Structures are given as C-alpha cells and as structure tokens.
Image (tube, rainbow, N blue to C red; front, side, top):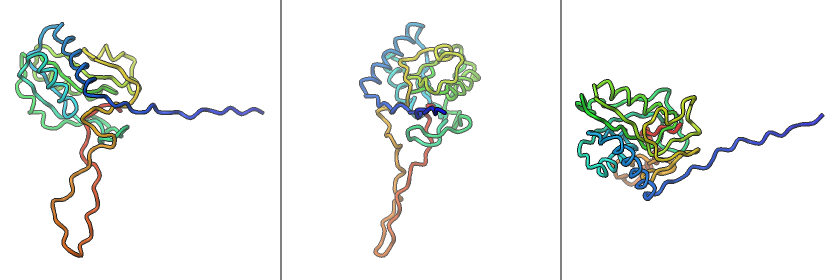
Length: 203
C-alpha cells in the first residue's frame, strides 16, 4: 500500500506598497477616469479609500470630495477576519449627489462586497453617472465567476495576496493608553490591543 503526501497549503506573504507605487496607481486611475470624461465628485470609502480619493481628485482638479465609512473586516491586521456583511456608518456624509457624475474610490477590493454595497448606496441618491476605481484587486479572494473588470470600472493593479499600504501597519494600530497618571503603589495599566474596525475589503 502506498501513501500520498499532500503538500501543505501555503499563503503568499503580504506585500507592502511604497508611496511611489501609490502615486503611480492613482495617476493611472486618474488617466483612466478622465479618458471617459471628468467626474464632478469623488467619493472615498473610509478609511483606506480616502487617501487615493484625495490624490485622484487633486490630479483631476476636482474640489468636490465626499466620504462614506463602510467596514468589512473586524480588525486592521493582516488577514483579518471579515464581518458577515459590510457595515455602514454615517451615510449622511455623502450629502446631496443627485444628478452628479461620481467616481467612487477604494484602496483594495477582495470579495468586492464593500465596493458593491457602497455603489448601491450612492446610486440610490440619484446620481447621473457612477464609476468605480480601486488601487488593486486581491484575486485570491475574488469570488467569481465574473472577472473584477466586469464589476469595477478602473483597476490599477492585481495581486494574489494581502496588501499593506504605506499608511498601515502589519498588525494594525494600538489603541492609545488611558490618559491617567498612575500614583505610587498603583498597578500599571495593561497595554490595549487594536479595537477599531478596518474598511479594507481584502477577505
């Protein structure tokens, strides 16, 4: 009787993007969008999507930049667990978008659920035209069968692993220590872990 050894499943190591890469990606997305006509408003998905949204808005000369917070992972760390569905906070921050040509921007799409949920919210506000753009797509999490290009208008890059952006840390930020000064004899306050959810849709 022979036995077969099954090799272990390995997860590709995360990649870290440099600011030079972000600048190149945002220029690419700005050129793609302007080739189809300048949008009137840029909307960034908080938090990660706000940075490329602002950069693209500057490159296109657009001053109307809005934001919406949609989260789909439980923490900020690499390969963080996802929530069952994307959660939305403060939808009123989008303001009045009726009749406007809107470009919706996020840093990354994994399953595409965050971008899709936000797209439906923006469309419901009566926009005249809506386009979507992401810096990168994590193909290892993309559900299919439709290719990312069939659901996202502008994509700067594809990857097959978790991406760490220049504004992020690998383990996620730590919550600040309480603003108290221990007195003699007090036990030290234990360090707290990260508690805030991430907006990134890599899972």
